[in-house]
Length: 380
Image (cartoon, rainbow, N blue to C red):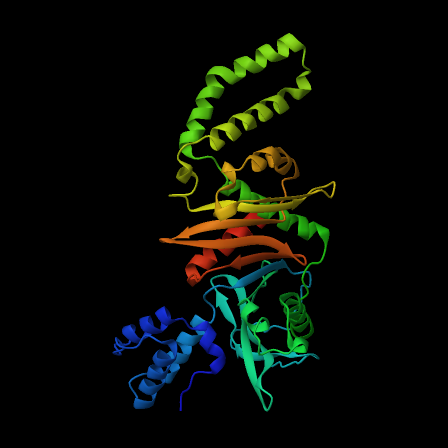
């Protein structure tokens, strides 16, 4: 008998269930609750109207979607225990001490185009106690992708906030995300001989990638850029020339003077711009939070309430020069517009890994585009 694992309930949304039933021409109009929709799928499999293999394939795709965390890292070890051919099997199983265990849930090795791409499916088993006399297992799907030709690795899984904040957990059973990530790293090190980079050179490359994303997404709206360009052409160059001549300013400050004055222009035009929606509407993505620890170990944290663009915040313009000098950033919170939906995406650094957090449900193509952009910035 085909039956949904209870642990999948949190990973399957009502819209996805309704879409699947509709695509398979199953009537469900009167069903609105998740449990009823799942029961209907199970019933249709039992009746022979749905193929259990088709449902399983769909579920494998579903658990890779939605709000999730993605970690990216360069790999330092060249030889792994991975097979060279996609038909070879990977036989491994390992457990760790503590309240959770890592298991193999599904395994898959793919060769995509000319790249050797290994896609490994794992799961983390959590123990919780809904009552004193019973123990239930909760599996958190994990996807590990290793690009052997580029020597980089992705680890992605769903955020586990809802698990360890549950009243069902006893204190000793709580599992934090850093602990989970540590155990995943240990697992792929022991079983696959894959070791990720843990040096400052790699970390700085990640910080530069985050800065490039910030730089790319914080460009001025075209209307404001036109005003500043026109002012620069007619007034700014003349002002700088007269200023330097009258006060005998050294030539070594030429670029700095122009940069500072341009920043002042940008700042006050942005702050006084009547249509604040010009900074957010019709724009694919814009930053609203950033954090940076500079070369002098000074920490800069700039936040914007209500997810407003940083371009309308005075403090951001005041620190813009510092950001340009460092050309690094530790984290940036972005608001992406996907179709008609606004989605929060966080780029950052966590334990020598690039970190991307998706706060809302996105399909695979949308997530891949955002992750690919980060990787591209890493290699620039």
